[in-house]
Every structure is written in C-alpha cells, then in structure tokens.
Length: 95
Length: 478
Image (cartoon, rainbow over all chains, first blue to last red; front, side, top):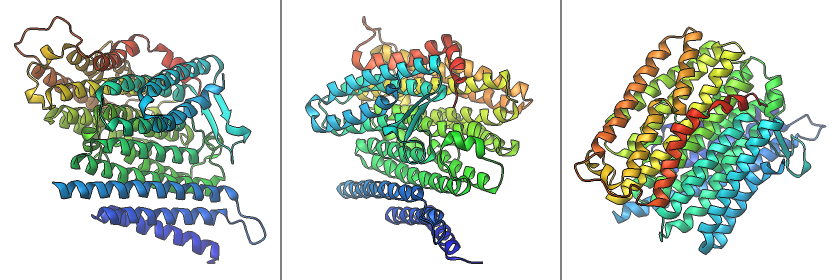
C-alpha cells in the first residue's frame, strides 16, 4: 500500500539518485554543484520522512535538527564552491 | 582532567577567531595555541592511559540531543600525532609565509582545520562526525586553494566536489542507520547492529563516501593535484592528517562498530583496493618528475598498506594475534603521518630556495641544504619501512598477520611496494648529491629545517624504539 509516508520517502530516494547521477556525469562545474544540492535535498527529504510517527504523535525532533544542520552546511559549502569558481574564471581570463 | 576534551576543540576555535580579529598578533596567538593544544593532547593521552575512556557531555546534555566528546586509546594517539605535526608545521609556516599577505588568510583557516580535526577524533556519534567531516573538508579546501594559481584553484575545486559528494553519501548512510536503529551513538550502535540489508547498505554508502575522501585507489584521482599544488605546510597537513581522519572513521566502522556484520568477502574488497593502491601509487611515485607529486603518490601507496590490514583483521579471531596486528596498523598510520609531513616540509624548503622541485635538477641540494636532505633521507627510511622506523614495526606485524591468517598473496604486494619505495627514495637522494664542498653549518634555516628534521626523526627513531605504549593504549577502547 502506497501511503503518503512511502511516497515522500521514495521520492527522496529518487531525487538523491538523480542528483548523484548528475554529479557523476556532468562536466560543467556549476551544474555539478547544483546537482550536489539536489542530491542533498533528496537526503533531507528522506530524513524528514523518517521523523513522521503517525498522524497523532509529534514528529521525532532529531531528524529535523539534522536537516537544519545539514542545510547550513550545504549553504556554506555551496558558497565556497561558487567563490572558487569565480576566482578560477577570473584567473583564466587573466591568462 | 575531563576538561582537556573540551579545550582541545574550544581553544583552536577561539584562537581562529582571535587571529581573524587581531591579525597583527596572529603568529604569537597561533604558536601559543599550538603549544597549549599539544600539552593538552599529551595530558589526554596520559589520562586515557591511566583512567581509561574519557567522556565529556557539552552543557550537561545527554546523548541524543546533546553533543558528547569521548576519547579512547585510538583517538588519543591520533590526536597526539596531529598535535605534533601541527605544532611543527605551525613553526615552519611562521617562517614560510614571512611578510606574505597570504598569512592573514592562512592562520584562521589553519586553526579551524585543527579544531575540526580534534572534534572529529573526539566525536562519539554519527551526525557530529558528519558535521566535523564537512568542517574539516571545507577548511582543507580553502587552505589548498591558497596557492591562488589556476592549477591550485582547479585542484581545490575538484577536491571540494569530491569531498562534498563523499559527505553526502556518508549522510545518506547515516540516515539509513537512524531509520533502522533509531540511534546515532556509536557505542549504542555497536551493540544493536545486526547483519541485514539495512546494515549492509548503510555501511556501503558510508564507506564509499569515506573512501572517496581517503583517496583509496581508484578513488585517489583528486589527491595528487590537490596535495601537489598546495603551499608546503598545507600539503604536509593534508597528506599526514586530513586523509587519516577519514581513514580513522573507516577503521571505526569496519573494525569496531560493524565488525560482526563484515563478511570475509566484504573485507577482501578494501584489501584488494589497498594492494592496487600500493602498487600503482609506488609506481607513479617512482615515475614522478616533481618532488611534491612523488610525495603525493607515495601517500596513495602508504594509504594502501593500511587497507591491507582489513582482510587480515577480519580473518584473525579476537586475541593476542589480532591485537598485535591492530597495533601494527596504528603504528604504520602514525609513522606515515609524521614522516610524510616531515617530507613535505623539507620539499617546501627546497622549492622555496631553488625555485623548483624538479627531481632531475636537484643536483647539489645535499651540499646547499644538508639538514633538509637529511630530513628527506630520514622520512624515506620510514616510508620504506627500514628498521628502526615505526613503519618497520607496522610492516612486521602486517607480515606476521598475513602468515598467521594464511593469506600469502598480500606478502608479495608488501615486498614489491617496499622495493618500489626504496627505489623512489634513493632516486631522490641520488639526484640530491653534487660535487660541491659541504658548508660548515648543516642547519641554515633553523625555523624551517628543524621542524622537518624533528618530524622525520620522530617517525624513524622515536616511534620505532618507543612504540610499545601504542599497543598498551589500544587496549583502552570504547
């Protein structure tokens, strides 16, 4: 039986796999970084699904805390990657 | 006594901020932090040896929501090695970057790297390990990009992407673990993990992610450019410590937490990859034209040796033989950390003085920089694994384990790898000697040559002759 719980979890797995595929197969740096973020979203979605404990119970707070931390890490890593790409293009323009 | 745990993380973090705010006093701040943190690491090592496992719950929050720091024999030993390498490299870096505007950006990242490394070694649960892995990776990438040239930036970007992909796979594995067992605490996990699809797929995801970061063959492609184009003290720390941190995690997962789940077939995978890494890395090191690339490929090979222990440790039953092999593994990792950082620091001196690190044009280096050449020779002894180096003890136990487990094939790999290591070391030394007369004073640049010499000497003489406590300390485990 396909409940909402499974729907979210499986979509998370699918999004993660799509992201992983794009990271491995793309050549463009920018696309790879976006793909990593997509992959991260998939993992976060699985984590949020795990937190669900039925319609009456409050969700498990720990996976939620993990997702929040994970988002902060992903944003900082993306910022560093974008800065490096910009410096690389500047260097290549100078050459 | 327990406070050493929190200070090992908090002091480098606070000092990283202080160097950012007071760049004028940065060098003084870094050197005093380095000394204080090394003393702290030694105190922790002593405390673990006398009292057993150390535990600290930050803010009094218990495991689950809170962050617990804990140290056993293995993490205390690695923390001590990291402190020695980072103290020596800090002194070296203060001379290496003299008047360089890079220094301002270098010091805060340097201390941040130290902070995250210590936090990783002290973390007792999977999610904090994920966070510290990311912190370590980000500060390592930022340091590697400091060279600023196109090649360094390209290498740093590839390093970043590989690192992020590795951590994402690790996080996916962590998610599976939480879904399956409802806990992230390592000590609890080691009791509840049972063989089955969840444990296998979680272990597979986390391991692939970590091996990508540890640069095990064939996932090593990013390491030589990244380690080869970074500034010397950064290369030293990346090769000696950063790849060891992820290796430490693989070790914890395979040999400790999931040890019941790992089958002989599964354990032979890291062994086979390790054997390929030994052969391929050593061969590439022998063919390298630049010293830094030689050192980077030698790291690929030396990491391979560490993975050769996996199938043997899996095959040996718990007992004296397995404990001896475990100690051999750790002492090999410690020796490589000290020797490789000494080697990279020495190469940095040659590169700065002669403007290049091409092996063929080293002629006369032994006469111009006798102490530096001696440091390269000493670290070479440790890389080959000649007595009295710590690596000799490590390889001895590796061979002993291969004999007692009846897995003879690894012996051939170890022999060929050792021969190749001897060849690439002597190739460098052969080129370094020239016809010129020797100078009166062997040490010419004290602040840079002494750290390199001390690290190499520690690996070759210190760990070899005084390695016995390693086995004692490893008995203290989580």
